[in-house]
Length: 219
Length: 331
Image 1 (tube, each protein chain N blue to C red):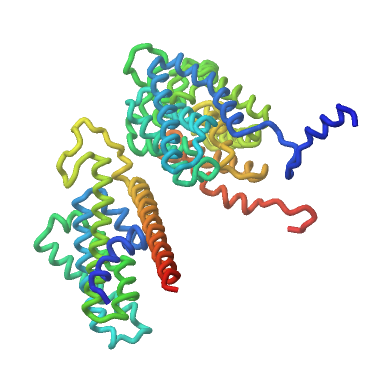
Image 2: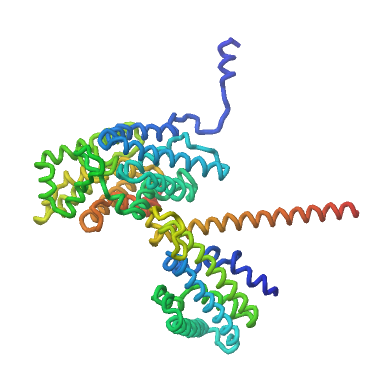
């Protein structure tokens, strides 16, 4: 299997938040500004990739009946490691993410990739799958965070972008604003996805039609 | 064959049923509702000044333009002339204070039409009342500006005052009565509309007249406003007072806030409320109970907006629960 394809599908085609609609909790809770969204994006990217590697390594030794507790234990270990690293070297990020860092253990997307992909594949594809999903998640988080931070306080990564007199709607940095932004973005992704599917269908039809013409002229 | 008979045959048309149609249409109903709101709207312009007119125009224009652009963009038939977007804009304007800066009504109208109406599929598919969604979003976005009402009595710009319900919540009943002088003065002021508040919620009299005409025409069901306002009256009478049961002031509670506007114009929206009579009664009582709950125990002085939105969300359940039995069938 093509590693680039495996990596790429996590970013658009199967984007965790916009296409799979998994792990919406962090997408609501820690996207009120770009900084938090980016921090959470990197954390999840690391955890999901590391977890995929470990799971694909140990999958032959795990009894399928107890795989979920085993996966959760692995994820919890990785998250604890991440938390200690953040606490030691990036205390600011650690403080901002706070409780949500611990909640990474139960993010649906991480367990889902372990179940769906890493359990059935070898290390290298699992690594690219985890990385792709992680990047897709991080990109989606930053996307939501950027919209909310720009429209809410009018800043980007803490820098004032819009004029200081801008009186943004408070709702954008409240939870309902996150729901609105995510909903509209999922809608946008669906529109783009439909458009792409239609284009592909047209191309396929054109190809078969051309094939028929060739066949006829040959006959 | 006589010439007359020939002519008659020429006029025969072959068509599928239904053969008898009434002359009601969406645009006729919508424009009638708009027209019945006009007196209350004009009264608020008279009371609050040109600023109210400007806010109202921004709301309406933004709503109509947003609807036009979205329908153009989606290659749908453009239906801005049916008055429904106009009505959404007008209702939103009635729900906000006249003093808000220009971008707030603009934002509210765009959210109401684009998010609450067209992401659901347009007119007839929306789950929530668009104007109320617009107001709820505005209240969450700019809580201070949305709860700063102009003082009616003074003609000086920039003087603000609390609404009667705000005073009732924070300073108590006696203080509220003393503001107006005595009880009768208070009722009169609330009924005629010489008090502060959002643009459309001031004059109970004009709203009731407009609503009564709509009931007379059969566009709205009398059960909804009667049961909703009645529920609020009974519950606030029973539970609203400090001197034990049945010491509240139902008249004050029924006349103040956005209750009359909400009960006649928003809780009767054909799209977002149950279909059957019984369902509408359940809807109205539920909205009344939630309103009282928010007024008496909630953090906000007024809760009609959220009460109706919450009941909107259970409308499909009410419809399923109170589905009428087929003729001859046993339930």
